[in-house]
Image 1 (cartoon, protein in one colour):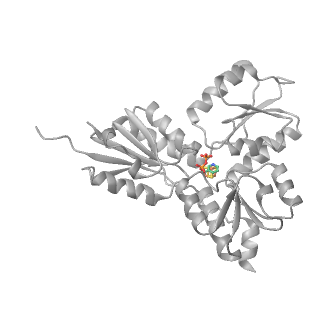
Image 2 (cartoon, protein in one colour; image 1 turned 90 degrees about the vertical axis):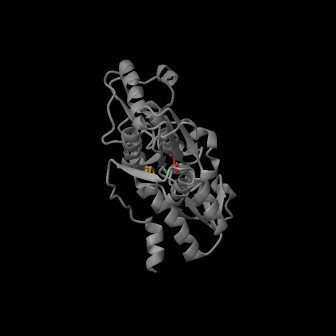
Image 3 (cartoon, rainbow, N blue to C red; image 1 turned 180 degrees about the vertical axis):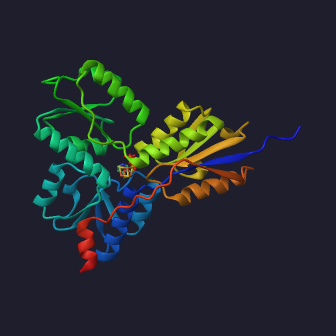
Length: 317
Ligand code: 2E4
Ligand code: SF4
């Protein structure tokens, strides 16, 4: 009997989204334009390789704006910041470039708008994640964070006819809808956001991994441990029928034993992952007999965002 064919199913879309591309280019251009060091509040995107590469070029990553020397230049990460962080930066006389993804900014607008209309806002998202800290910070008096199913029972609202849910941009679509159903059982008049908060890139990457996972004994997701959207791809792959799924930053982290008895390996990557890391993984797999690569395409992305206005102005000058 001949051995079963070994192959890779490669998800498309995968990797960089428009918001990450913009944020990474923002730091690169800031370094070129102003010279090192350029301070960056938090990781510009949640990817070890990206952060290390920018650090080598002169970016200094800090946790808070008060670690930046007065008058220096600081870039805010793609995940967004609360108004309090903008105020803190202004107090220290910092020059700022805001690399918040426009699709995160859209959710900030929604939070401000519904707070102004005096809604109770139920923000579905992961406790402690920078993005929900920024969004909630737009209207702390009006926002309650709903992370787990247990949180649903803890919610208290002033007027059950004036409640809306919003969400983090990088959640699992299915899990979020579960949470919404649970919330709606408690608050039947719960309103939906005016448009999807889970962004196009998050949704497209989940659809692509769902399409290939049922055929895979193993799915490898390239991405970092602190990357919400990358972690969700592992969960979605498992829910869609993959026998096993793992998150790895680099090809060398894949354990040979994961390949035992595997004929089809699914490969994808999070929205913060440069494609050269996926190419490294494909080479690593080819060296082990998985040289046949078939792409599974479920969407054709054409989204692009202009660079932050502060930077465009400087580049024109
Ligand atoms: C900003 C918003 O949010 P997550 O942890 O998935 O961030 P990551 O940096 O991995 O991905 C890019 C990104 C940035 C996603 N949403
Ligand atoms: Fe923006 Fe979506 Fe990319 Fe996040 S994953 S940076 S919200 S496009």
